[in-house]
Image (cartoon, rainbow over the protein chains, first blue to last red):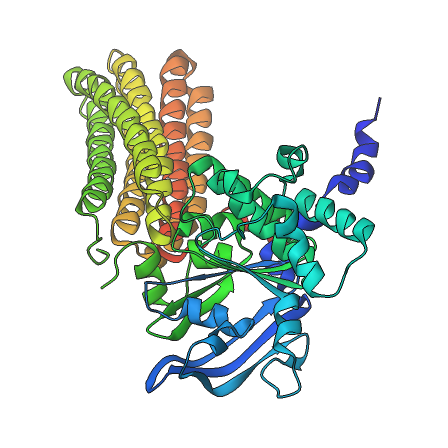
Length: 280
Length: 227
């Protein structure tokens, strides 16, 4: 039996788990994405104005704000998805990923998107088998060794908490999975190429509460290894899953800080009005 | 301070109802305390009986506030200042209910004292005035979300403790000089103690008022800062 006098020496060993560190302890954490003075326009329509923020590594950062505030645009800037839209361009400032300017001419966009995976609002598996959905990115990246691909498929599906549900039917069509399973498959597909960052654009908006809870639990587990940036309209979800939150309005970053601070005592009145439902 | 209108009118109504019930409960507790002390000072048993009877309504309001608070949390998941308002309302009501309990205790002691020859009951007048002022100001601090007033109330509790201590000392001396009235003096000491407890609950309310207005937890600061 442990004596009471010994307890102070034994208790701290159980506290805290790395994954449960308080948000304010991440202040000094490594910065994975550095957004500095970013301006962005669709043609002549400027949609981001002088946005600056630091996304800490191995943490979850949430972007919230009303529709059209620029949060998804910023998310898509991080892996240059906006390059695919004609007339869309960064008009000022820069985004650095691990210290590298992602818009520099020498940056290989395909490689950038391998390092910065993305999960979308609606799950979008390929019309292929579960196995092929995961292995596709690896094959594109030049991995052809079967054992290596098998290992990566299992590892990714396990990381996405899907392995136990699909391991007996890897050859089945991905469209046969439920909506929540399809979304986790998309997360597994993004993880297969071992990215540094996973961007999530409203990943649970089309899911039921159980599937949503599974994705949120997954996000919590994934942040031990990955940097996660999530756009969500669900403020309770932002409060539950994220360590840091940025509130956007009309293309401007109004406030960015630890999620606990943003949801208990925001510094800006516009943030308070938005999160409490007193906006506009 | 009234926040801007919420997108959901039902949320504003629910929050407003919660706040109004807290203020109504505080008003009833204040009246009960006043009646109990007047029952003692004016040797009026009927005031004491009314004060004791009032407690039931206050108890019911405490339950209602808890129910409404849980309902607001469940239905609207409030955040930021809204969350603090709901949490504070649910924390205030037990303190107000305890103040009403102290009033009931005073009223019961008063009925006993009223059957004895007069004692120096006036000794509790300044204590009652101080405790009542603390209680009213703590509720004002909550109602107006006044941080300065809340902090000021907390600071006034030490003076009430001192007043209670001095009253106890004097009443103990009286007991030695007039042992036949021992039971009466003990009842007066008990009344003084009840009023001192009112001050403690007012302090809790004031601390919660500061939390609502400034999101700052000012409880137990001497321990936290090691001073």
